Length: 118
Image 1: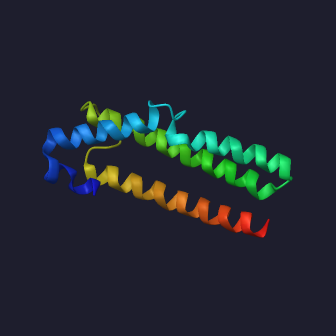
Image 2: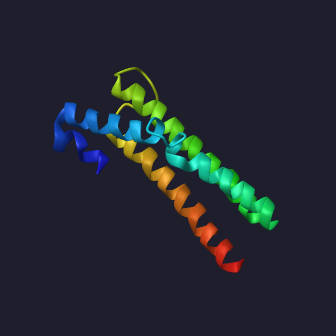
């Protein structure tokens, strides 16, 4: 959908949508990266309490996903403000989101298997 924002909403509307996504990720009470860092900390604590090394590894992976979200927000904000940076098009924004989605799908698939196996 992000790829079509500019066509659907126009330049200004697409930019406002992007700004809202950035605010939701980084500024509105999430602890940054849309709660990924907080959830990673929870998994780390759970790994210690349950003596489960798989949960600890997943906490590291989720922290990496959080870093990807933070990088996305930073570079998208530069794009929104029309500053030079890694992102120059909505296609690149969509590509970054797709990469994050793949990583998170992998993490949560592993987490589901870990929890089911106990």
